Amino acid sequence: MKHQTEAGFEYQTGRYSEFDLDEYRNRYEKLIECGKKQGFDAFLFTDEENLRYFAGGPLTDAFCFRSDYIAVIIPTDTVKAPRFVLSESRINATHSSWIKDKFFWGGSMESAGDVTLNALVDSLRDLGLADATVAMEVSGNEKLYMPMSVFDGLRQILPALRIVSCHDVVSAIRGIKSPGEINYIRKACRVTAEAIEWGFSTIQSGTTEKDISRSIKARMYELGADNVPFLTVIAGWEGRSICWDSYATDYAVKSGDAIQVDGGCEVNGYVADMVRTASLGKVSNDRYLELYAAATRAHYAVRELLRPGAIIHDICEAGRRSIIDDGYEKLLVFGAGQTGHGLGLGIHEEPFLVSGNHKTLELGMILSIEPVILECPDLECSTFFTIIENNYLITETGFEQLTTSPEEIRVV
Image 1 (cartoon, rainbow, N blue to C red):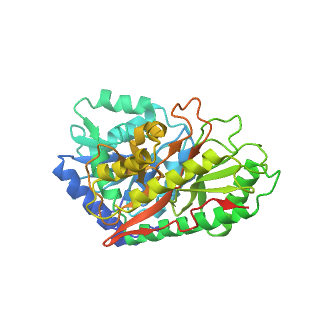
Image 2: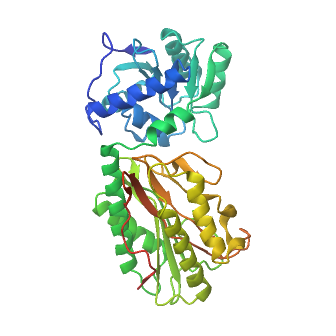
C-alpha cells in the first residue's frame, strides 16, 4: 500500500475542477457543520455523485467497472484532512479534486480482496476513526458503491465503528443548487428541449423508436451535451403496455400514433428530465387526447403553487385534486402520491414530491414536475399513460421554467 500526502491541510485547486475552489470550500464547510450537528465523526462516500459533489471527482469512468470502487473519508474534525482511498491505477483520476491526501492499494483491477479492505481499515485507524460514528450511503435512498465483502469486513474488523446513514445531511445540502450548478442544469434543459423538438421534425411513416432515439441523442451531443443517461421513446404502445422507462424498440411509427419522449441529457454531470409528445398526423385515439388534456391541467395546477415556503404535500394534493375534479380519480398513478422529484447530479433526487411530505420548497431547488394519468388503473393492463414533464428552478418570486419547448402535442 502507498500513502501520498502533503504537510498540513489546506484547500487546493484541482487541475481539472468543474467549479472554482470557493464552491468546494462552501460544500465542505456545510458538510462539516451539518455533520457535527448530527454527532457524526466522519463521512465515508463511495457513490459517484457524492464523490463528484463533495470531493470534486474523481472524474472517471471507473464507476462502470463492477470490480473497482473509490472511497473518500471526510472527518468532521477539520484538523484531520479528507482522504481518498483507491486503487493506485486511479491516481490520475484524483487530479480533478481539491483533496490532497491519498491512500492507495495496489494497481490490480480486482477490488474485492483483502488488500482493499485493509486499505480502508488502515485509513480509518490512521485518522482516529476506528471507533467513531461514520455516516455512509446505507439508507434506502442511497447507493453504496462498495463490495459487500468489504462492508461486512469493516464491521467485523472494527466492531466499535458505528455506521449510520448520511442521507438527511447530504440531501439537504445537495438539494439547494449554487449558481454554477443552475447554469449547468439550465444548459442541459435547453439542449434537451431543442434536441427533442428537432427529433420530432425527423419523424415520418416507418421511422422506428430506435431511429428517433438515435437522432435526438446525436442532436444533444451536437448542441453540447456530455452524456445522455436516460432517454425513452414510446410510439403507439402496441403490445407494450405501460413502460415509462423502456428501451426504444424497432416499432415503426404509423399515421395516428402518439410518440412520447422522456428523459434528458447531461452537462458536466448535471441532468435534465422532461417529457414531450408528438404524433404522426392527428392522434387517432380520442381517449389519449382527453387524458393528455387532463394531465396538462394537473401539471398547471401544481406549477401555480411553486414558490419558496410551499409545502410539498399541498403541491401534490393540487395535482391530485385536479385529476379527481376532471373525473379521473380511478386513473391516478399510485393514488397520485408522487408528483415529481428533485434534479441535479441525479436524475431523481431529493426533494421527492410525494403526498405526506410536509417539508417546504426552498430558494435554489430544481424540481421535475410530472403528474401522470394512466389509461387503466391496473398497471398490468394499462395500454398508455399521459404526461407532460418540466423542470423548474425555485426563485424568490416563484419559479423559472427551464424546459421551455411547446407543451401541446407536436403534429408532424
